[in-house]
Image 1 (cartoon, rainbow, N blue to C red):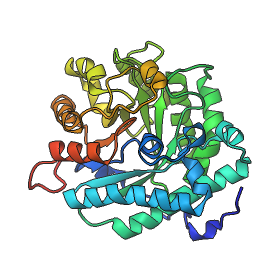
Image 2: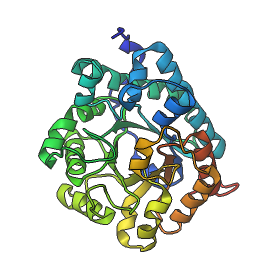
Image 3: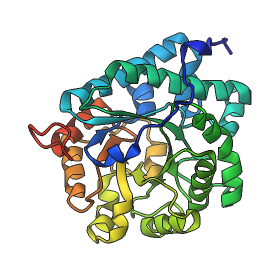
Length: 332
């Protein structure tokens, strides 16, 4: 691994983290499908679908900076906030081994990722565009299938390494994505609670609107809340198309108030179909924007909006056009 001068990425823990209550007073945008954008649009090879690999080289860090800059510009143009997620989805201990990194090297890359985003926030943040920095945690295994599962205690021990690293940086919170079984979600929430950093949990859903384990989204959220004293700041849905879960959302219920964020797929394909497909299905960005707007009629707290597999700048642009009131910058 090429030696990185981490001093250029100042990421020391701030005296006070951002007041995350501001996440409820306006629409916040996020980026799109980072990995699918790099692989399919930019022709960049990402071993194990791991964007953290880009942090190992100056050219990769420039690529990440340019990627975030487009979305930060969009948020400023539309008067929205922005949640900037670190490229650390596959930057936990098991993935370090697969990527040929020591645990210390991976910890350094996690820190450097937050430092890179901190520099971008200093450049782009504005009164109408608050920027929240999130250290991203991914599943220990595959994002689509539970595979070998852990107990909640095992998951807490495994994820504590990465979460404690984020807690010692300028990250405002931890965001866990593509979590597909509840015990891992509980473990992540408990590890973040112990480390003293807020965390959000985003569940992967199948075409029937349920977790890959067959558990309903409502039951998963309620179980995590019950076993962690409602530790997650909020919940999200990711890696599913709106048509896959719109039916369960339309049923209503107070439990929907725990869901504040969405990163939907561009494609209506199942995870099995996406895995087997040699091409990228980008769907219809404008239609996706309208589907987000329709979901917000049933989900009164849904105001943190980005994309997952197959989405890119075009999709987030259309989502913002559909969901931000015309002429009402920042209004949720």
